[in-house]
Image (cartoon, rainbow, N blue to C red; front, side):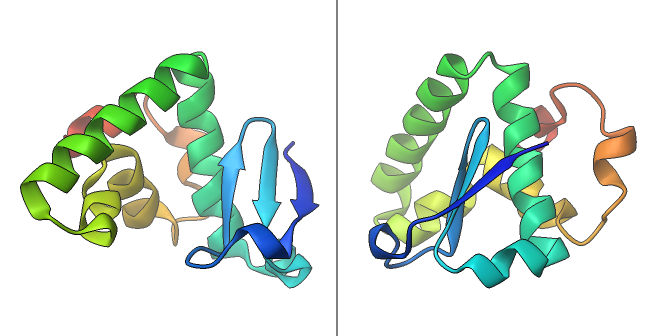
Length: 108
């Protein structure tokens, strides 16, 4: 189960982020948003699968590659395989119950 921490001043462009085992929130009301929470929990699972450090390395490398290619921070962020999976499946609240191991690979 994630640990939720509200830190409103660090987020300008995002509502929150997952940093295992924490979900950092811009607004405490986000704890009540099942789609947002599911999106962040998908990231927590991805982080566990890649033993944390490899997730952050992979995420950073993908971001830089997409930033060079797309010339937009937002477009680069949305092109990251981890984000593609989380956005594609955030509305499926039962997704994590049947999610295949390393399923983010299908979003490369």
